[in-house]
Amino acid sequence: MPQLLLHNREIDTVFQLLGDDENDLTYSVGWALYRSPAFLKEFLSSVIQFEGRVNDVVLRLQHHKHGRGITDIELELPGHFHVIVEAKRGWTVPTRQQLGKYARRLQASSPKTKRLVVLSECSSEYAAQLLGCNKVYGVPLAKVQWKSVAKLAAKASRRASRAEKRLIHELLVYLNRSVIMQQSESNRVYGVALAKGTERGWKISWIDIVKHRRRYFHPLDSYWPKVPPNYIAFRYGGKLGSIHHVDACEVVTRLHRYIPEIPNDEWNPMYLYSLGRPFAPAKTVHTGNIYPNGHVWCMLDTLFTSKTIAEARDLSHRREQKAA
Image (cartoon, rainbow, N blue to C red; front, side, top):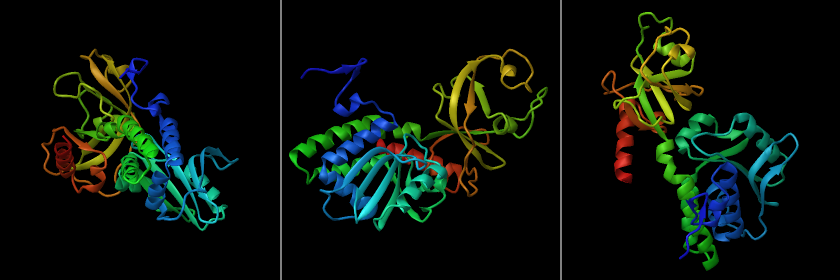
């Protein structure tokens, strides 16, 4: 069979010709829902328990209404239901303000069954923590993972037509390469301990470097990650303090240029991280059985569902062993 390359990247499915950003993923799923009644039925059954005919369902992509945002996917069957899907790439969710615009749009819609669906890589538990609600302006909110969409498509394939099966197969190849295979990496958090004190000659503590400067740094040696992590979790005082997305990373030798409270000395090469806004579970997550200065890896959602960081570490390890 011939080989197709795009920018020296092998292409196995037509969906890969689009790309793999949020809009590309949205268009791909929207097209598959449109072209496969079996997949559309499975999706609607999952999010709103609709079991009727789907021949007259209207699907809209990137639908704009003045003052009420641009929706990723809308599914509407007049007189029956109206569903708005907001898709996100990575472990993030839309803002309450954004969801509020969509909820207002649904409130003005006539069908009795209305639903907001947040589609992301987040587990339902983690998404629930970030969103902090099950309804927006009275409209029920459903949290769906990309891997769940893939499972629904695979289930639909069992009773789909031959043409639908081919389409679903291509969608599954695309989703597995673009989203699902990357989840274990994007979900991983590097956990470190912060000392409470201030180093001699410094005018800022380790904790304040993270809290107020949104910075963190470490040497380039074998004890530390060679590839910058996506997330870092900081613990101090015997518990989890904050989690941050790593927005940027650079190698520096003059930390004073970035953190003026540190003396203007020359250091060995350091990874210097720029950190995103802090977030953490609403509950207290204690450290647990971890060596005081020990570094741990765990999956992001486990920090929201475990009682201790040690428990999150162990659960993550079992997951990785099972997936290997």
